[in-house]
Amino acid sequence: MSKRIVIDPVTRIEGHLRVEVIVEDGKVVDAWTKGTMFRGLEQIIQGRDPRDAVYITERVCGVCMASHGWTSAMAVETAHGANVPTAARLIRNLLVGALWLHDHPLHFYHLSALDYLDILAVKDYQGNDARLIGVKERIMKLVDGGDTAPLFPRYEPDEFSVTDPEIVTTVLSHYLQALQIQAKAKKMSAVLGGKQPHQSSIIVGGVTVYPTAENIKDFRRLLTEVVHFIRTVYVPDVVSFATGPLLPLAKSGFGQGPGNYLAYGGFNLDDSGKEKLFKGGFIQNNRIENIEKFDESLITEAVTNSWYRAAAPVHPWNGTTDVNLDKQGAYTFIKAPRYKGLPAEVGPLARMLVYGYRPFKELVEKYEMKFGAVTRHLARAQEALIVCDAMFKWVEELEALLATGRVNIHDANSWEPPVAGKGAGLTEAPRGALGHWVQIEDKKVKNYQMVVPTTWNVSPRDDKNIRGPLEQALIGITVDENNPVNVVRVIRSFDPCLACAVHVIGSNSEKMIQI
Ligand code: NFE
Ligand code: MG
Image 1 (cartoon, protein in one colour):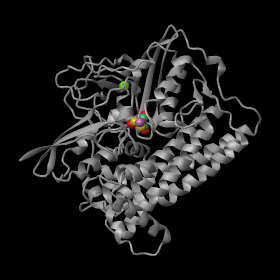
Image 2 (image 1 turned 180 degrees about the vertical axis):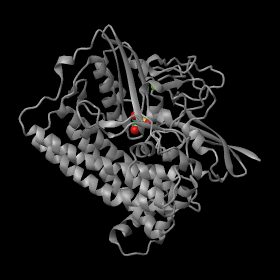
Image 3 (image 1 turned 45 degrees about the horizontal axis):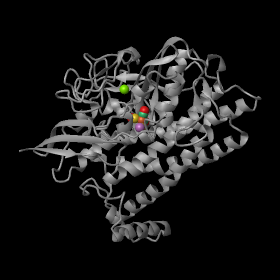
Image 4 (image 1 turned 120 degrees about the vertical axis):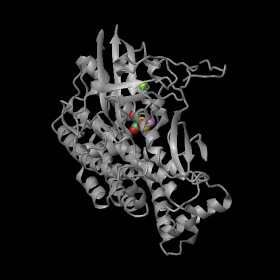
């Protein structure tokens, strides 16, 4: 017996995703991931001043926005030949790094943890911790009042759900605490970015906000609080889930993708951009000891199964975003990026494997985990620690630099766009490798292409009919047809952001708003 299960929309992710799977004898045998929203960022930028792209592309998303502003600035700076001053590089690292510290705990507590918790277990909490009693009362008041969003609706707990009342209540207390921490992390990026959401400091050639001693003090105070939470609450929670109740899932390789892992590298540690906090590289077919050098020229995007006109797969320099809603066989607005013609997983797991981060590898080896949904969560938590350590160093470096006197934060010499030029910005966003490509003609944007982490992970079948990473990760997993919680567990482990992935606004209705 074969059954098609459709989840539309997938909740507790960013943006609009539809997932269809075919289940036979309790296992997924085929899968389609569909980005159902059309945006249009790449067209909106065409014909504009290239310096506007930083602020337009930031509007792609409400989560990783500064990542786009940063990447866009890098692309346009390459075309301008601009040299970003040291202080501006550090300020950008701190501003963007703060968003990572916001994003990773958010993903675990608010988007994913509910897939592994039997929330109603709180009613059986019998301990005498006043804070936990408070959490129990708060949650039960919502349950009794029938107003349980966003905790419900969700799928039913199963054998992998944590049911111990003490643990469930503790994790829910951390869920609430993480909301406060998120606000603090957002404040950090506002201190250096002028405002949040959507910072207003990063511009082509540098930044505009010159930090005062007071700003640095505020930033460090908030950083200390956020890092304390990450080190003492978030990371231990993820590790205890991964090595405890979820260990059988981790050992089974539940939700393993194509086994190809790609990182562009990100967060410049020097002004030349050669030294990076996260290294770039490519791993093919799970050969994690063989890390290939990342080569940008090997990226292509196919649109065979996407609602766009184009023929063969092309490098983003030659990419087009030309919608064709009548295309036979197409099923998504997401394009299919490929590296060396292969689908590749991007994100924390790819980064930790390319980096060869010891603490992560040791945990994986010690517990004999295979790569998949659980190790994605573990990798995300481990890399948050790397960012935490780096943030303190960058604050110190910046403070020392500012103490030397008035320093430059913007390259004014390369502010004007060239008559013609091209540039790529490649870095890492919380969800994975992020690239923007700009071509300038007559001082205006001739073409602009973005290839985004979720475009990689949630890509459809390509020109060779090879499935995208999430589609592959879903195949083979065990699913209860009446309670397909395992499907969403795998989906959410990638932390997909469909707003980013599609980035390209169309309207089927005839109603248009005139301003
Ligand atoms: Ni909208 Fe994003 C990140 C980017 S997309 S969240 O991180 O770039 O996958
Ligand atoms: Mg694109």
